[in-house]
Length: 112
Image (tube, rainbow, N blue to C red; front, side, top):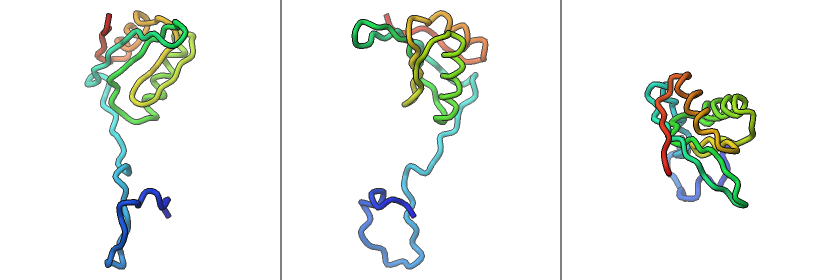
């Protein structure tokens, strides 16, 4: 049974076989690396810290987490992967571009 908050727009149905389907039941299909178009940004965080951000990944949360884990491990730093972005602590743009290119992704540096 789904949570009642998922059904806030549905008040009543006369169909006895009615089954509510939420819109977020669809899963995102991950594009192959050759069709991905990733942009590598350098971002300044609070306190003057610097982070490398990979944007433009199209795919499931599991796949972006796996790619983020591999990039973090190869760079030897921490970070996170969520909301279609991979954030890696520090300025590792050159290393990230090299790793993604080796893996078959189309990527380039973006921003200033």
